[in-house]
Length: 64
Image 1 (cartoon, rainbow, N blue to C red):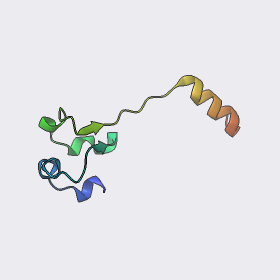
Image 2: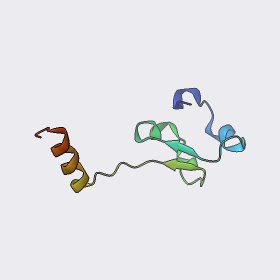
Image 3: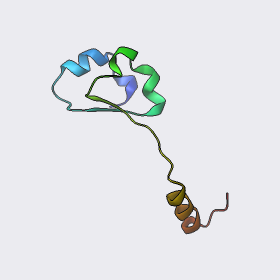
Image 4: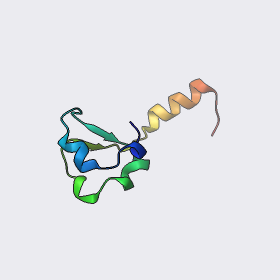
């Protein structure tokens, strides 16, 4: 389900159909600030692992 289909996060949290709600960084602004602390809403944070990034770059043959 996309964030555009979620009109009301409070109603979504009351519904027991979903155990956790994963929210991408791009959709984070659509989640009400009061709900950021909910244990059922997981705000994803991107982490770049420099070593993993280097391995991916080498195996893809891309020079950045």
